Image (cartoon, rainbow, N blue to C red; front, side, top):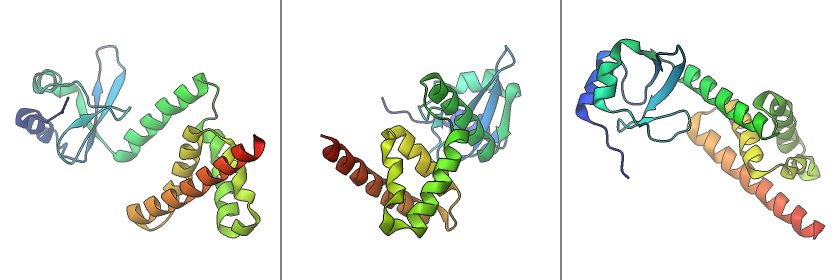
Length: 169
């Protein structure tokens, strides 16, 4: 199902100064908040990065409870949601992975040849991705440099994981 933004929905959001590539929260009747992002093309996404089920009528009816938020606030809410899910599954949270990510990056950049960084290959793929997201969020140089570094480190870790698996067989 293709999700296309309605011009009315985008107009309602613009009235709250929420533009494409923006973020907003919606206060629910029970006092909780639901967070949304607006893509460049105007499609709404939830914290799960799934298309949101908000129509123009929904937005109009709830316009007074919609508030523009920063990307940082959206990402903090997203990280809290993901951490709660990871914790429920017995996986390490972002706070627990931060020192692992710092050590991985230090080993990867300063001691690559020794292979100490390969210890991160013991984690499952989701955790590896999360470690790399933490590492790359602290890198300088913008999106393209961060993505290139993420891709390179992920490729190396996957190869180390495959080698480790083959060795254990």
